[in-house]
Every structure is written in structure tokens, then in C-alpha cells.
Image 1 (cartoon, rainbow, N blue to C red):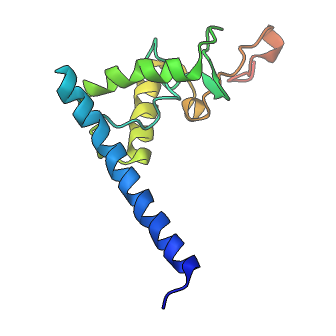
Image 2 (image 1 turned 180 degrees about the vertical axis):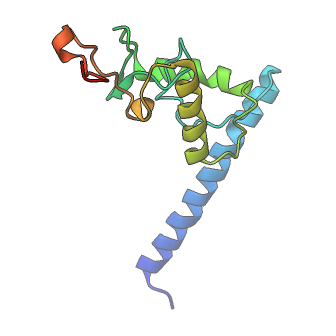
Length: 142
């Protein structure tokens, strides 16, 4: 006869699997009842993109997203604004791997921000501009 401990573990596993299935079916059933369309998108990097520019600029720290121009929206609201834009992005499909999404977004940022040095958008921070001429690196000897 099986022990009671094993029986409880088996029951917990079955109940957990059932809950996951119900949770997966919920968005479909709710959208059907409301008469709305359900569209699945790839959520990769949506919390790291500035929702106003669509580029990998800015920095997310905890529940805030720090934009390069000083605006500080809530990180979840910023990500939620990026989700509908992802629906119409032809370069990123539902099954595009995270690293490919990241590389594509980095390339777009590098293309739009022509003066950014390579790797800047991967860190999500901007380098401060030199405040004086003495801080500007010299490209040639005078």
C-alpha cells in the first residue's frame, strides 16, 4: 500500500497541472465571451524599451524606467505600452528567441542613433556628454 505522504504529493501534482491548464485557457474563453480578438506577441525586452521612441534607450531599475530625457514612467506601464506595438512588428514573431530580439532591437537603436558608440544601447545607459573642451578626446595631434 502506498504511503499517505506519496498520495498527497501525487494529488498536489495533479491539482497543480489542472490549475495550469485552466489558467492557459482563461484568456481564450474571456475573449470569446467578450467578442474581442486575442493576439499573442513575443514579450521579450518590452520592459527595456522606451515606449515613446521604441528604442533600447533608458534604464529599468526596480519598478521605474529612467528615460534618457529624464522622464521616469512606471516600468510596467512602459512595458504595457510596448506590447501593442510589438503586434505590428514584422521583424519579431511570437517564437523569435530572446537573444535574436535583443540583437534586432540593438541594431535598430544603433541605426537610429547614429552617434551612439557600439554597445551603448546594450547597457541601456547614456554616457554623459563632456562639459568642457578639456574632456573631449582628441582625435589627432596638433
